[in-house]
Image 1 (cartoon, helix red, strand yellow):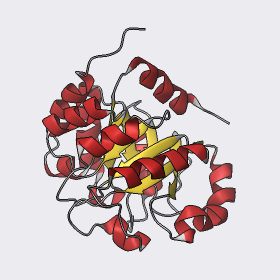
Image 2 (cartoon, helix red, strand yellow):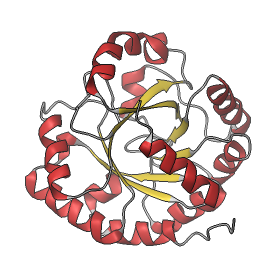
Image 3 (cartoon, helix red, strand yellow):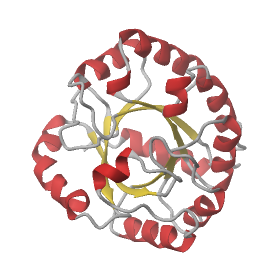
Image 4 (cartoon, one colour):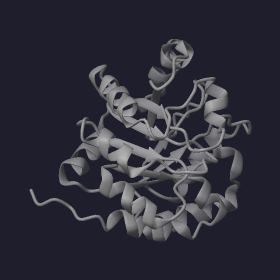
Length: 252
């Protein structure tokens, strides 16, 4: 099975090189918006384009992914809200298991249903321990998952959850405050989790300015994901990318 994306993430982590992923919700873009976002992403040196959302009601996931691919060569990684959000035109798929909740459907149930289609897709599959962190407001992901988020100040719960996910074989840990979060995840929690795991750490939700993105990277995030803020102001892509890529790289 292909591992090109994951190998690149591991190589960057070894060097301390931080990555920026722009999250594109198929429900919120048209052809013109895709062209604008991909043009800005290419010029800013964005590392990955995540595509997906908690609902995706527009039924044109394949079309969106193909349009992105026709406009740029940035790796397109699916960030699915449901098993039906699979497109063979993408490069990879985050196979999410909601390890912060206790809903069996999102831990393994939906994976059993989706496994044949996911395998058939030919995508690079990246098993991901998904952790929802309280961002100060109800979010779509917490509502859809019917699972309580990890409290924002409970670092020990977050780090133990992340360690468990890693030991269960997850290749990534993804900490998300969710779309519409009032507050981004605290640097203290990111640092606590990052210091206890060896797999790459992805952080998203509520990140609205380059300074916060930079601080999250310094705290230990390997990949920063921004969606909502960019939907409101696409020009943030350049500033976010510049801040994230300015974090010093380790000398090997």
